[in-house]
Structure formats: C-alpha cells, structure tokens
Length: 225
Image 1 (spheres, rainbow, N blue to C red):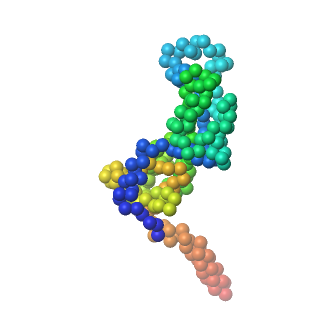
Image 2 (image 1 turned 90 degrees about the horizontal axis):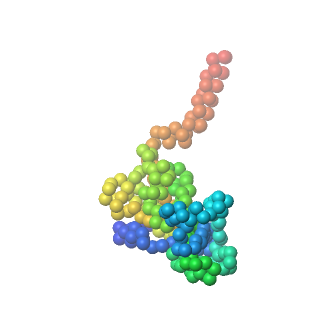
Image 3 (image 1 turned 90 degrees about the vertical axis):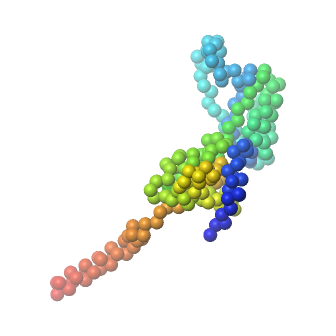
C-alpha cells in the first residue's frame, strides 16, 4: 500500500544527523540574549551572583516568539528580524550582530518549541515533542513507552511526506542501519501483532451476546408453554 524506499535511500535519511533545523513560518521560538559571551550562564565561582540582588537574580520566565507569515519574528529593541530559512545557529549569529549595538559581546540562544512526531499503532496514539533537532527514532519510541509484546519491532514505518521508510529494530544490525533522525511532522507506525481469537471476540462479541439472548428468550418461552 505504501512505497518503501530501498536501503540506500534509508541510509541517506539516517545520515542527516549533521543537518540543522531550518526555521519555518508559524514556528514558536524561545530566544534568550546574554551579555559578555554568556558569562552569566556559567559563573562557576558565583562571583556574579554575589553582586546581584535576590530579586534580580531570580530566573526570568522564558518568552516565546512567533514566526509570522512573512517569516519574521518581532523582538524587543531590534524590532523585526527575518528568521525563515535560517538554521538555529545562523539565526543566533544574526541576533548577536544586531544586539551588539546595545550589549557588549552578546550571546544568543535559540530553541524551537512546537515541533513534534506522531506515534501510532502498538504504543497507542501519542504526540511526542522534538526536544532538540537531532532526536533519533529510538528516542521517540522510548518516550512513547517503547515497543511491548503487542508490537512488531521488525515492521516499523516512518511516514515522511509522500515517502514511507520501513524500519527493522528486531536486530542490532537493523537498529544501527535504520535509527534515523526524526523530522517535524513525521508519523511513526508500529504494526501491532494480530491476535485472531481476541480480535474475533472483540468484533463479534456484541453480536454473539444478542444471539445468545434471543436463544435464551426462545427457550424460556417454549418451557412456559
């Protein structure tokens, strides 16, 4: 029913580890700006903390910025910044240049927040957030509570756009070859193990119950005559 790429195409998809995520329209980004090359993040000897009041030292809440339909994100002080088509690192470098007007040696940290993968089949319907840009299939399955006795580890399918990749996690060699990097919007389907008897009971149980009730009623009526 689905077209499954040959081994070389799957290997190419698995080699995407080094590729960085590219910002798209409607992304939700968390952007933080630090001075002095991020000195405050490290502060190993706590000297900075000694000079900051208790109120000022409290952790600032993370702010989320939306990438609009023009591919821009609106930020304090620097205004609109074009983000679409840039990798996270490229956007960080661009922000560091823009904020250099206001701060000494700024350091920008950008994360995306709204990317996810859908897991269907044996683990049940789950939506797993992509916490970073290089999450592998094994991590997604682990977050979905893994593959239990009801799932086929040798028949996992990753649907990506109009492509379908067949994954085999039943062997170490299969795992090493097919533990691919996940992309936002991927659908992972773990084929359940079919159980004909239990499925028949589930599907035809109500009908059998109705028939049994009718037969019982007929027997009772005949016995009362």
